Length: 201
Length: 201
Image (cartoon, rainbow over all chains, first blue to last red; front, side, top):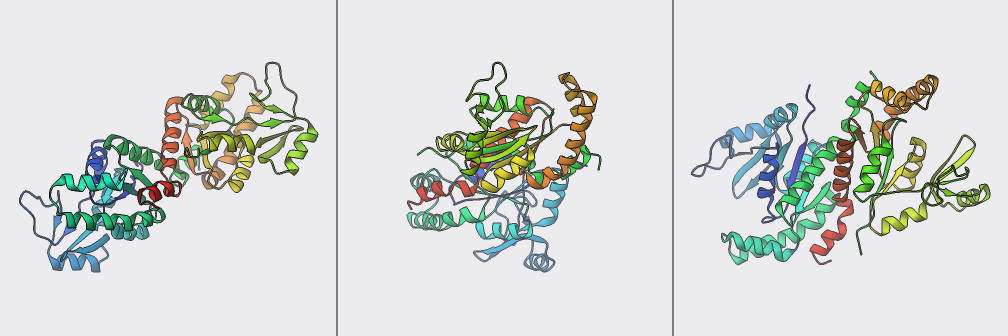
């Protein structure tokens, strides 16, 4: 039996660069969990790749059957992380990343206390503002809202996440998370099998 | 102010190769704590390098003044880790390694709950026996005793240490511990200052 993979939750303010860092981790063998959503696919989005596109009634049924690790509503549509595909990957020894907001993260933590909880922060609030502006897709008002939300979430992060990784540059943030993954695999609670094997139990 | 270093406790059965792995970590910038002892210096041993050589009465005084992170008696002599030099190094931002037995490690853990506790195991008991024999310094009876002690300590290690590192080869065990150090520095509990600085608190 291969060793079970790690469930890794990554949260952080909008604009912090989670996507780019996660892409690096995927290059190194981790897998990004695919969410289910009730919103319609956008051009180019593929079912099972970008999202699992499901009907409202199917989504409600999944909630009722407790099939989600976390779920939430956002601007009138539902989003959730189905547990079954995540568990299949973990059982196959793959590390699975969930890129989710803090509320969803807290749901995962209560369902899966062994999840590794990582919060990503920018090197400075100015840098975060700069990155949001750099996208060129959002109004100054929207940016101000996102910054206010970040300021609010940051102090909570210290108490609710296991690790805080600063994304000053992508390679170093990805190396930090790879280090966390390496270390977490060595946690005594995850190594009882190795010790039992050693002493022939 | 530089970030405070990590206090790292490394234990493991005799023959597991702690010394060689620790030497690699020292090359990478960690510092090994120097113990105090009441035993006489052996030829070539220097005060303050291999041990702090102290009198029985000085040692007793240090115990009374609560100056040790841990201390124990071994074949009629006393050994202990003085707290003051360790704290000076930690304050200067250095990671300090304590190479100590399980009983001493438990004393450190209760005095310093933030210590990072690492237990090193061999890839197999046969390999451990081979390494002990390879030293060529111990009788078969002594080796049998050490193996029996290892078997006894190993199950306890899972419950009392944070991490279990297999020393199959020195470079990879040292990389594992470097990964643990990197990850531990990113623990949310150690990063409240970074978050406060970010939001200007």
